[in-house]
Image (cartoon, rainbow, N blue to C red; front, side):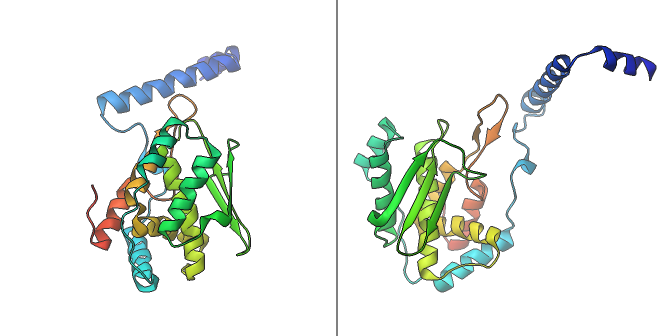
Length: 228
């Protein structure tokens, strides 16, 4: 014990950080190449129960007044997004096209594109019926599919608001919103856009959305649709 105390006394804070870095790297390499497991632990993201997804799908089947086909971004618009993802006019055009799929006039929505991190989310919507604003937190790591998924999620918030479809619990409402995005035809964009991605720092990982990729497939199964 005295040896341990003596060791801790003589090392500095920089030595501690260096040691922790090597320990973290060692754990990563052991999981990745020895255990052959994903570097992202399953506990890193909230797991949504099948029962809740079933509840969401049942509510949508009961309350939605029309069927939605699969949404596909127009080829010309998709090409523009691949060239420059941060162009405000192109993103607004994308938002309007997503809204049109839902039967909403997107022209009245103000889209604000930011690179300042929003708290725990990639997008945010506020509305009082007369005026609606969507904020998109655009990061370099975001793919085209991620941006489509985030804008679809925010547009679905507005759609559900108009239709009066909601849960009282805020977290369940977010799961309902992601479920509705799949239900309304954005499933494949949600699936690809909600993939786990490399974070801003080494060995860090992040994702957008409230459900996981496997949850998308569960929702499609409950709807009687197979995923690609």
